[in-house]
Image 1 (spheres, rainbow, N blue to C red):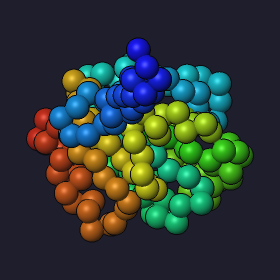
Image 2: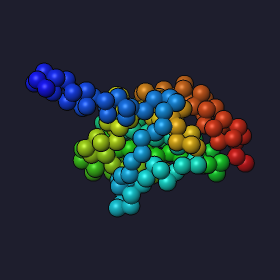
Image 3: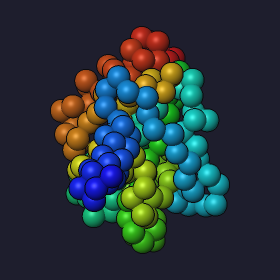
Image 4: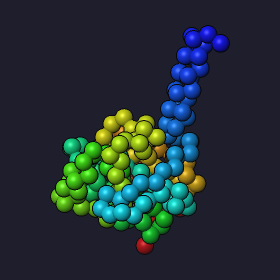
Length: 169
């Protein structure tokens, strides 16, 4: 085998996992485990199978995250009893930056740290914030890039449908 052929095989081998791991609508969400930003406990996406999950990627330097985190907190409060969970992934390279942000914009849902961007690469995160709505079977149903309050009614309707069509009482 010549060097050109070896190079092509190596290049294809390196590129295929990147394409296979990007999470888009209709694809299984890549599984991961990560340590909580505010503790040592590990959160595993697989342990949330059976729930509808909104996986939200954010960072302290993201201006839109000041609005998105509280909006997602409200959505979780509304639909949590029906089997909805928000898991946030903080992408700050220094976890203290994320912790300082949360002092100003507190939330009660789990936030894991991804200081090396490993989880972000699995999901092909391209902007901040970016979120993935995952159904009870672990399949990505929607991908949201950025945040706009005007999009919340559409997201709320999608969550409502996935949890069973009714707002919990």
